[in-house]
Image (cartoon, helix red, strand yellow):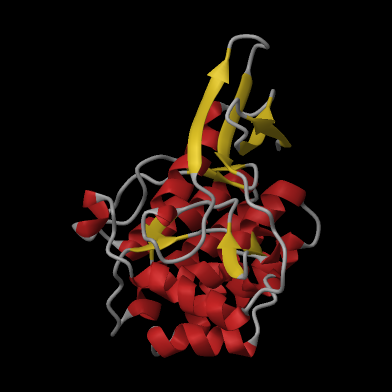
Length: 264
């Protein structure tokens, strides 16, 4: 969806550049605001986004300039888990989230898929409307839509007895968006919004998180009843997105989760 490069300023400072001649400014605006929101928590290393914009020449040239980081060294899974938990526990920087709302200040993208983030008061309704049904509508499959609508009627049952507070999420946390710099974990390429902290693990099927990671994370944020079932719900969102992006077997993966949750 984009190309990358480096820019060196007159003072000798190196910046990381991402650019595109086909993607709208929304993609880079969303990435910049996502990085800034996570960076503001001061809990985990995130490259700072300096600027994003669009040029007239060449037409349609959109870009983001951010802090250049030299990725190297071994990643501490335990430190990653602890830092991520601290980010999820951080006081929201946006007033809407401080007031208990779910969403984000701008819409963004997850991969190449548009991700709507308009604020909502209720987490379950947000996840139904802005996440599951948004992806299902993009899929344009009557069978999938019918099953998803049945599942969405059941979703509130999975959240009974727990309190969901807005946490700042990376939103697309898999192994390709995690690295190490100066011996510290770094996360990047986000699809950030304020949501249930458990939603962060919807991409764990390709994140390679170790037992040390989960032990450190859950030492600060313990698992709540129903965690494993809700994890399926959060994984479903990403399977649906992968189906919309890549097609193929992700359809069956998404449908299998829905069938399982519906008891079919």
